[in-house]
Length: 278
Image 1: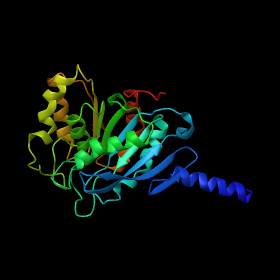
Image 2: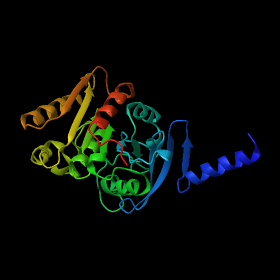
Image 3: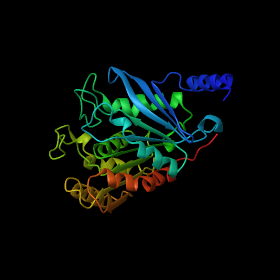
C-alpha cells in the first residue's frame, strides 16, 4: 500500500473511533468500548457496542439488543462474550449493547438500585439507553429495543424489562431466575416485592393490550438451581393468561448451552422487534 493511502486509512479509522476508549474493526462489524457517564453510578461506566455490518454506509436506523452478563463478575466481564456478537451477526442486522454490570467492590449488584452511587438499574434502563440513542442510529422506540441476559443477567433483564415496559418490547432470560439471590444463587435477598418477578405478573397482564411485550425464557434440564423456578414461573404466567415462550433444553447452567442456543434466541428477539428503517 502506498504511504499516503496507508496514512489516510489510519486517519479514517481514528476519526471513526473518536470518543471511545477502544475500537476494534473486523471485515463485517465494528466493536466499540464506550465509557458512558452515569450519575446513578457516580462514574463513567463501560458498555460494549457492536455495530452491524454495513452500519457506516447504510444510513439505516437499527433495533438494539441490550444484553446483561452473569454475576458475580469482575468489571471486565462485559468484554468476555465475543460469541454473542457472532450469534447476533448470524441472526440479523441489529446493534448489540453489553453494559458493564459489576466493578471492584460491587461484584454482585443484581442490576438493582441500592442507593447513592449504586444505581445499576437506572444506569442500564435509563442512562445507557439515552446514551446509545444519542450516539448511534437506533430505532428510538420500545419496538426497537430488546433486553436479554444470562443467569443473573437473565434476572436483570426480566426485572428491568418489567419495570420499564415503556422502554423495552422484548424480554428474554437465558438460564435466569426471577427473584434476587445471593452470589451463589441459593438464597433470596430481601429487596422487597418490586424486585420479585412473581409479584409483577398481574402488571404484565394488565399492560398487554396497551403495550404488547414478547417475553421468553429457557433453562437447562440439568440446572439444579434454577430449573424449578423457571417451570413455576411459566405455570404462573399461563395461569394468569400471559402469553410467553418457555423452553427446556438438554444441558446445565453452562456457557455451552448459552452459546448453542444464542443464534436462535437472538433471531427470536429480532423477529419481534422493528426491522431496520430509514
